[in-house]
Length: 112
Image (cartoon, rainbow, N blue to C red):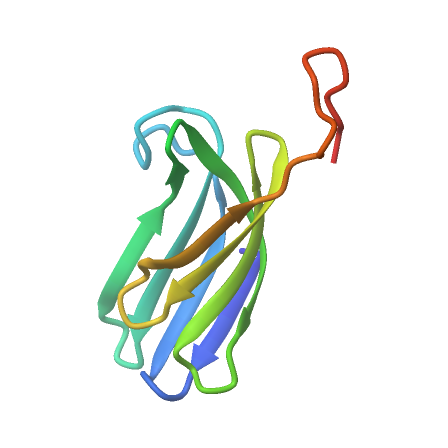
């Protein structure tokens, strides 16, 4: 577990991390995941994430907005850093940004 927050507005416990489980996602490689439980332990939502053609392979951290309406999530996918802004009520994307090296070429691939 690499992300753990309590959302007092929606009264949710939100958890995120990385799994290599073969029965969680459509492929056996690592996938970043997030899920939310209410205060009684009931499942509210859960996701693993893809950006068109590649998996979000890690969830490395998160920060709840001051009004509790969104969650900023840091991670990586396709060996590149990424940022996601999630709706805390349902776990859907508000925004997804993948950060790529401006001068990347087939011969010059940066390592993060």
